[in-house]
Image 1 (cartoon, rainbow, N blue to C red):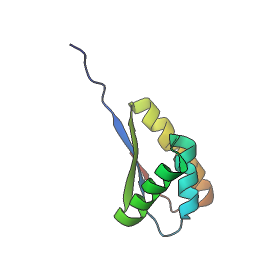
Image 2: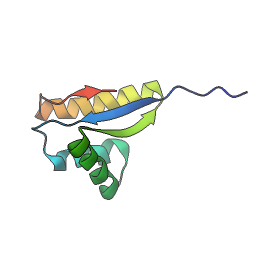
Image 3: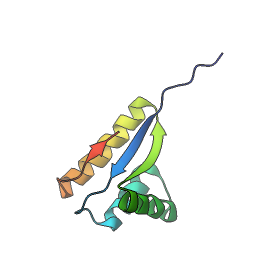
Length: 83
């Protein structure tokens, strides 16, 4: 029987400072979403307080989480990063 690998979610949380366009850009760059899908996720973040960007192996989730954290922290120190 095949064992299922544990997957970890990468989630963005809304804040009052980060421009929506920048969130769309980051989602496109790090999660390979097209503009329409990235905009959909950004609106979910904006309207519901958080948005799911994908489920990955622990190593990939940690890498993507660190990538997005680094780019946001350079511009907006208020950004929250959790996975």
